[in-house]
Length: 229
Image (cartoon, rainbow, N blue to C red):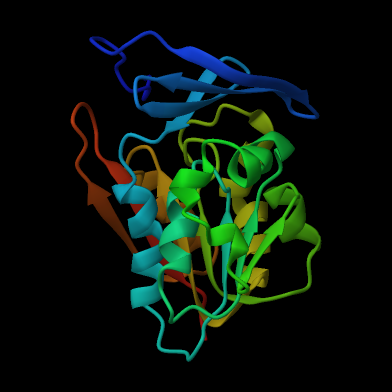
């Protein structure tokens, strides 16, 4: 079932930039006042509504009582999640993993910088130009929270290489990057009871889902879980 947003009644898209990278083509388009990121011809995200991306960060922070907690954001995207994290003084270190150099460039010196709101200049922020799946599997650092917004979520991925993130191996790697009692927050284009079950099977506790109503179709969702202390 497609979860692509409807484009009926919207202006034609104008191509701003298009690049070939190690994972295929990534493009930035402008449609009226909004920007869209397209990967290998498939819509990924736009700047129309950042409520669910901000909730991804806020819901994780609300679960933490640690002073100056650290967070790893998986996917820079259009910048809503990073901007929300940088606007919250409670966060200590803020790392964001983004595999597409083009997306990082569009924030540093392009139109998406307006949506990340200068967060890349925050001294707490570190941009990791890396594939999140590989980073979770190989890194040694631990975080108080992982806030992951990769592809369209666990039930419908554009890139097959992202499937592993939502399976047993990827969830085990995510747990290994969390400190005991740390919070995993996962954005999804629709609620997934199967993913909730996968989180429990991977040993996470306090599994729950928050939904965000959208103009058309099924709601966006943020899945939350905690690594056992």
